[in-house]
Structures are given as structure tokens and as C-alpha cells.
Length: 189
Image (cartoon, rainbow, N blue to C red; front, side, top):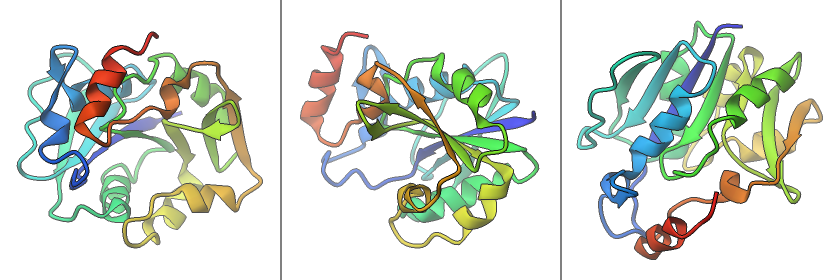
């Protein structure tokens, strides 16, 4: 199956109070952790959807890391731009740039669960997390999303979602405020 990964990194970071995705986390920019997790997925390419001001850096080796630059900070716009960039893929993982602790084995396990489902989603203690793997047939519905809404509501309406139960709550942990960096620094994997 020809899969791609999106890393959504174009948000405004209002609650953080600054350039959240460039903030240092375990010695690297926060977004680099999400990119590394996306590169560990069984994908041919990784597309980072971000603003013009975010530096992604060089990522030698494969899979290739590309950027799609957008002016909007709306989540739906990021999803649409990312899906357009990987339209030829048979499925696409969606990683969030502010989730640095995603276990690198999760994506491969999701790929094994997708089958004929609309999407495959990791879940910990009854709560859905990231990354989410969308099948090609989900791409059209995602491109119709609007505003600052992600695909969560779309997923909640469906009964053809494959859930992967995991015990690691890292699939739920993101950075919203500057204090979250210190909290996640202490999180044991």
C-alpha cells in the first residue's frame, strides 16, 4: 500500500505565546519529534504543512521530507493542503506537529489495521489519539472540512473506523502552553 504522512504544523500557537513548534524539546525543535515519528511510519514521503516562518531543516535519507507552505492557521486548511499534496497516495497518516512523544511503532501497527476501513485510529483508555491513518476514500470528506475543525467530528460519525488499543498515553499528549514542555520532558515513555 502506497502511504504518505502529513505533519500539521501551521497553527497559530496563541496559547503558547510564541513560536511553539520551534521551541526546544529534548534538545531539538518540537516539530522535529513529530517529523521523526512520521518518518518512522511505513510511508514513501512526509509532507509538513506549515507557515513560511517555520524552519524544517534538512532530513537526509528516506523517506523524503517536503513542505507545503500555507498562510492560514485553520486546521481544516492544513488538512486540505496536505491531502492535496499526497492525493496519489492510497492512505495518509496525520501527525500533529505539537505531539512530540508519539511512539514510532504506532504508525506501522495502524497500517496493519486499516484494511477496508475509512480510517485507523489509536486509542488509549477510551480516548482517540494520533496519528490517524486515513484511507484514500476519506480524502474527499477531509477536503470538505472548513474552519478550525479537524477530522474528529468526521470520524465520530462513522462506524468503519479500525481502533488500535494502546497503553501508551503519549498518543494523547500535546503541547498547548509553554508549561507543557516541562510536563512532557518528565513524561516516561
